[in-house]
Every structure is written in C-alpha cells, then in structure tokens.
Length: 415
Image (cartoon, rainbow, N blue to C red; front, side, top):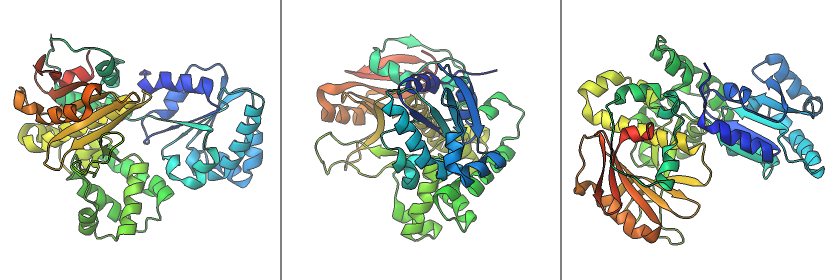
C-alpha cells in the first residue's frame, strides 16, 4: 500500500518549474517510492547507483553517462552522492537546456546525504538545483491523515475542541521509518543495528575520514543524553575524547546524514541582542532511534520513567515540526531563550516575519504560569506575533490568555 507523503505535492510542483531537483533525506524513508509515484508530464527513466555496474559506468566516463540519458524523460538518479564525477556534466546539460528556454525538470536526484554540505559537489549546481527533504513518517502520514498542522497554525484561528484519547505512545512508535511503521513484526532493535551499521560503513564516510567508528557510536550515545538541551560543543568533545577539529567533523557527518539535527536560536530580526542565548538545541531525527541509542525500551520509559519520557516527547514534537516543514516553503523553526532563562521550546517564523510560539508540556493540564516564556516572546515580536500554544497531553483546546492556547498534542495529526 502506497501512503501519500506531504512532500509529494511540493516535489511535483518544483519539478514543473526547475531544471534539477535533489530529494535528500535519511536512508529507508521512502525516497525511491515517492519519486516512482509522483505525477509528472514526462515518462520516467530510473537509474540507481546502488547497482555496481551503473555506478562503475558513471564513474569511469561521467560525460558519456550523462549524454546517454534520454532528453525527453525525467531521469531519476538514486543515491547520486556516490558518484560526484557526474555533477559538472549535469551542469553542462542543464545550462544547454536552459539556453533553449525549457525550465521543466530533466533530472531528479535522490540521496541519503546533504549535498549542500559538500562544496565540491554542490558548487557546480548553485542556482540550478532545488533541494527538498523527505523524513520518516510524520504522525499524520502514518495515520494517512494528510494534515499539516503548521500550515493550519498560521492560516486558521483556534477554537474550543475536544479530542478523544488516541494513545500517544503508539503514535510516537508509528511516526518512524516506513518499514517499521508498516510491519509491526520487525525486530526493531535488529533493524536499528543494521541501519546504523549501514550509515557508519557508507554514508558517514562521505563527510569524514572516520578511522574509529566506535567514536561515532559513543558520540551518538552522549548526544542521546542531551536531546533537547543547548549544545555545549566543548563539553561534549571533552567527554568523547575528540579534539575540536575532529569533533566538528564527526558532528557534521551525523547532521548531514540526517541522524540528528539542530534548531537554531531565535533573535529579533535586524538587531543583535545579547539577552538571547546563541547556542542551538539538538534533537534526533527519529524518536524511536533515540530510545534505541539510549539502550532503553520506549514502552518501559513511558510506564516507569516520566522524566525521560518528557525528553522523548519534546524530541517527538521537534521531529513533527521538521517533517511538516518539509512540505512548506518559507517557514523556519528556532528556539527562544533569554539570558535570564525565559524560554520557548520552538518558534516558527514565516517569510513575512509572522511568528507562532510552541511550548511543550508533558502534562494533562495547563495554567497561566506555563505562558511565561510565550509572553516574553510576544513582547519581543510585537504585532507579528500570531499565537502562542502549549502542546500538552490533555484533551481540550482552550484559551489560557490573550493570544495563548492550550492545545492537545492530537492537533498535530487530527484537525
């Protein structure tokens, strides 16, 4: 059964107007499935560099490889980061096409690495390539709801509504890689063992000369204890035993292979304000992967360890925000924290400068004291502040102050 992805419609629109599209994202999130199911004006010619023979041909004679691709079809090249040799020839082919006034997509590339982090690859295609990202299933996608809560937050008013209990833990467990969400009989520990081995042996090496893979595993373990916390690079590098240069290289490889991501701090546009914290916060792309790295069973955490589950809950919200952002243009996510520790977990800002603040609370009720950080953010933003919400585990959308709402987490997947 094919499950529609939010990124699909944006991918189709982009392919109609741009000569080259790069769809990146973690391994096993359904990139190949998505590109095979997009609606396009052209027939599809699919090539994958997972085939040793195809990859060898592209590497040995990249000019001939690109020249041999049909000009009347949409050429999908999977795992393109494995053959950097073809990029300069892609540039030539695209420029020739643009000279003829044709801007429709000729090449749709997919890969499990962030090409923009590799200057030797991306520089050739600056201004010619649109980059989209596909992440694991969102809660909405796993429930086939096709619901983007960020779009709704900016475009619609909130009103009183009561939700039925839908089982938060099961929602989090299914907001994951498609294979795990669809096949509940898979041994998840073994699946993550195999997944991480593949990442370490193949993708991480694209970004760094990793001589000690065990350091990467240790790095992930250390980061798992800091999910949702401010990133202190000096402290983390010291704990792992890496010098600053090597630490930066390892950290970048984890980010660019989509194992983890950072949320930047928000500051008032056009003004540097020393009152704001300048450190990013770090999260894992998959909350179930996070519990695996912690060597903890997520069911056991949910029942016996409320404090740890609170961190997993915030990580889950962070991933849901990122997944919903992949199908939207011109909305960014930040966190907000002042020097006196007034904070908001997530700040969404669109290209008009309009802001929505999101605070996360693992509790069944909300009171006025939970809006402290949102009030400070509202004062800083001014008239562009759209609303502030506190995502909680209760059942009712209710106002908790002027412009502030308590919103059940169910809102993320159920309008």
